[in-house]
Length: 145
Image (tube, helix red, strand yellow):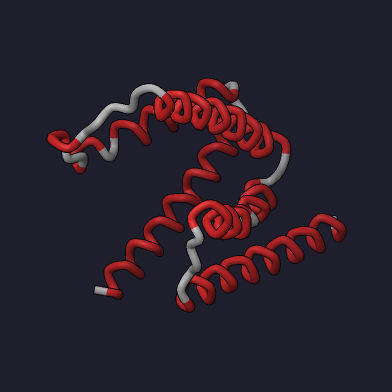
């Protein structure tokens, strides 16, 4: 069972890097909103076959307000991220994105008292070290050129 999760993690990494490179290439010819719409449509349509429609519950009241707030913040963040890919190399931007792991872990602890397991901590540390190392290599490469 664990091997399948490893395979999914590798597949997710490949797809995420492909998406980063696609955003970088698309930003040469398309505006941010067009790129964001394409990714939003893809992210909406792709999981639909896996949704259990019988258990779908639409938010209302306070939850609907939270969803609207989350959507607004996500839109602003995605716009800024797409703009970052437009202005800087994909490797630099994607390296900086991994700092979100720290914020996610911190917010998970603060709001829900989630404590990551040892494997999650080791995996997160490996990702952060690799992204930091990549950032250092890219900075040295930029200085050399």
